[in-house]
Length: 123
Length: 107
Image (tube, rainbow over the protein chains, first blue to last red):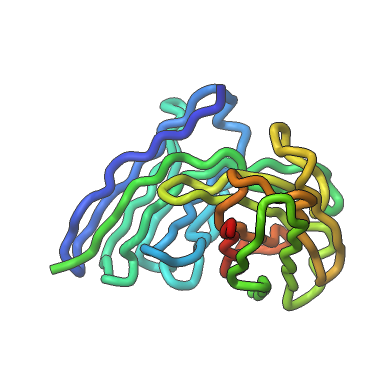
């Protein structure tokens, strides 16, 4: 069974740092693009960052320059290093696998999602 | 960035009703549109991908259609367990963007 388990969330002061981890199991982790998606309390979903199987990386504008995504395929793990944290970064952070079909005009979707880890930025 | 707009933002319906949620993209996205269901305190769950393909395990009362900029998610006969928030998401380009969500509540 495909499984994603996030860890590393917690309470941090503004300007502080936190590192999230996501442990993957049940699939060939190294072959898939992985994403972080977050959800502020009572709000909608916001894509944060992605890293492809070949290591190509993208970030949302709101975290660019502050967050760093990485992966360790030997440990089947995804990471998100979050620096210079702000109150508006408070959210549940989800680790998500991206599936793709097709080459010329690929179709992509997110499945599955981890259970999420809560990050609270507050003094 | 491609803006995704869902309507309505919330709805109340009775069990057995037919419910339709609309998602509009700010530019054409072909069929690169996915739907997710999220229940309180839980992670989102994929319902439909590529605009109309039901994910394994999605009940057949759910259907999706559309292409280009306009898409629909329809529940043909609402069940109590369908009470949830539904999000559309475009996968045409990065950043992947989501609609603001539609909260479906049972009368």
